[in-house]
Image (cartoon, rainbow, N blue to C red; front, side, top):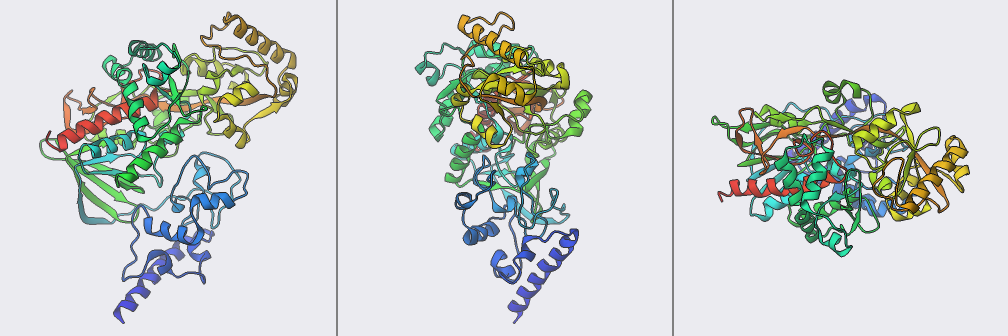
Length: 583
């Protein structure tokens, strides 16, 4: 009798909570399911309704009734299929919520007219919990952030024998790495050698320093270049395909590695890392936010305090902590604080890129470096947050202004290209390419799928579609084609001329610069140790990825970000494991 009463009280508690949250007018899934399922069908039977922060139990029941994402994706007939996307195999509860209005996670970055059962008009933020749990978990290493750097550090540390817990505040893993498109820069790789591409560690180092205005930390830039080929090898051993080699802005040779056919690198690498983490049974806790890094009286890091979506606050005791939570491009207030001229500018980043890890490290005594160095990417699709990868230009596309004229070397560094676009009428430009370029890079098809592309059967047809003077556009393309034939871009000095634009149809995407990457963050050693304000290493605290400063200087070269996350993620994981294991 008491057991039955406990179940009823638990169910009543859920329904009362739901009633309070339903006041906004939307009817969440719990209400829509009334009469079809009981609370226990989602939450399980027992005296107390318990939902883990990662919501695994609820999700397993969603899949049990409705099928997997892949199965749902095969049934869906929407123009933009939310169940088949670059986000990969994510939880149902990422979008579908039981007791608050549902929200399609895609709409965090896109502006689709996407209907969702129980959906609200705007994203719903989970209410902050004030409960403080008495629980204290233990691990050798805690990794903050589940992007490429975090996964890499965790896998490396695990393989060295450490017990690792990954904490991720978002409802999905992948971070900004999941959105990376162009590729991964690396020098002296097996794939370059197979293709007869001459390159060297010294040349990659020189390009990185030049691209960064020589404000980079030379030692960190050399670590990036020197370890790049072994990072490609490491990913390849995990199952990644990085066999296609192209070029992005600021590189002297082709060194941007990506999957065969030029597919987007980020989603592919993220899926490989997720798979390897699952094979190792790594403890990954999503919907969980680290709110403080804990230290002892001597200043040594001894763990973290976590706020779980459902569990409240609890502690994880650890011998080392690795901060891999990314930059702050999606934090408009912080961007505007450091660069007022960027106030109101769109961003290409996912919503979790708010700089929390940098702030945590700073509060723990970490020194900050290069915080004002914020990169705007020249080619974000106008009216959206969708980044048009630099690889499109690398494969032959050109930039023309609203007068139909070329105005810049398309593969100059991102800061210079962005400045050139902002100087044009309307502060935008058109990325123009033909069927040959389209076929050379698989990820271009995605831009058609998102309805971002204007097209024409001829150059004149395209000019009419994008409302630029046809004669000027024809002349610009003809001049560029001659430069390709002559192997000399006399007017704009573009170093690579991969292909002429002569194959119908012809296409264009209007682009505008957007906040893309923050070069600044926690100051680290070549061993990924966080340096304190006194210039000394903070014992037990490591950092890797975009949340660190010094690697890129004042401007990051396209393709160097994934390279940084993998290389320094490996270093952080290896060194943290050595410390934690007493080696």
